[in-house]
Length: 400
Ligand SMILES: Nc1ncnc2c1ncn2[C@@H]1O[C@H](COP(=O)(O)OP(=O)(O)OP(=O)(O)O)[C@@H](O)[C@H]1O
Ligand SMILES: [Mg+2]
Image 1 (cartoon, rainbow, N blue to C red):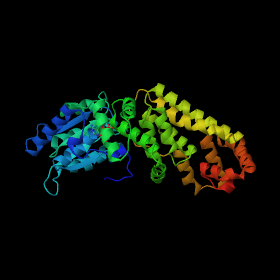
Image 2: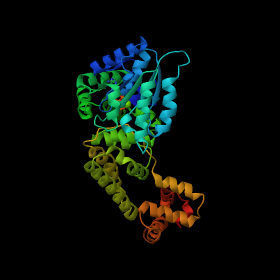
Image 3: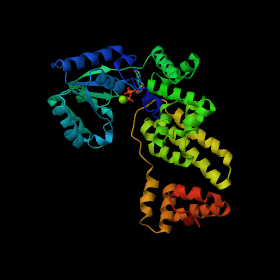
Image 4: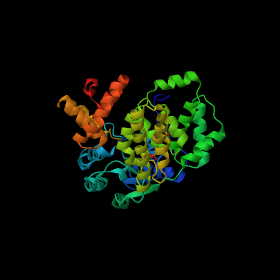
């Protein structure tokens, strides 16, 4: 069994093509294409797999490489894939032989996500490599209308992937449930499938959430040992559009709500792409922020439940149009800045900077309104000193 700590969509990633469900025509086409390479007469040099998230594009390529015992080289994070990297690393992978003379599949995952100013150069570099490559090149993309794909499409054979049919999804979920030695009614599984919109990754992830939630106490305890890091929580939170599943994800979280709020503020725009979605998402975040302020002022901890709802159900239901996509999350910037600045600045400046960053106001106003308020809170409830100091990234004594 693969690493038990992996989230289920990874843990149950298909190993061989026979485990891939749905999209049979495209999977068969990929098989024929790779066979043409193995025979030494490639039909085309590169293929482009286009389809929504979580339907097996990346998984098919991994399985293909294992079925045909080919080397697989993946270039899959957009920040490591600017023009320079493509010209250098991808170029080498495409034009040099493998040590043992096998073929090497070069996977450029999510080419519609190439970002930054280097876009154009990046696409041009890929086009050049396709002309010169000695190895099969596979690219994947979610958005068929992405302008970045226009010139790539001309040089590739395109395989379309579509949503996975419910009956196939049910097979996969049943198998996972059985492998886990657990039980779940078909009805419940169908409910999960219905929520997933044909995205098998999302369905497997929701299945994990539901089953881990329904475990026996010992199992829950042992699963708590599996510390999910923030990024994993963000991923799962953004994957679901079901308020219940979102609440559950957050309830298992080992990070406090303030930190989560910061991470969400930093990253929502990666998933809520339309103005309407983003507006709604930001609205929920500011409600959470507002409630947090009320808690701090009035010690009304009952509001905490609402904060969790805004951050979970609120965010999950805000994503109504944009499909889930795999993204690289960034750390919230201000605590990091505070941390870096801490070594250089004197303590008063640190506090001011931290406060003005949190409040988004000038330093003078920050100390006038927030600084005094926080000192007052800490004076009345010394127990909160630690909370505030870690929140602001300053030493507890700074708050006096
Ligand atoms: N067709 C499938 N057959 C079996 N498992 C699948 C299939 N599609 C998705 N899965 C499951 O979902 C996970 C994610 O799938 P995969 O990485 O292939 O998605 P993708 O289509 O590449 O999505 P993205 O566009 O977000 O990269 C897999 O690890 C596997 O557990
Ligand atoms: Mg993928």
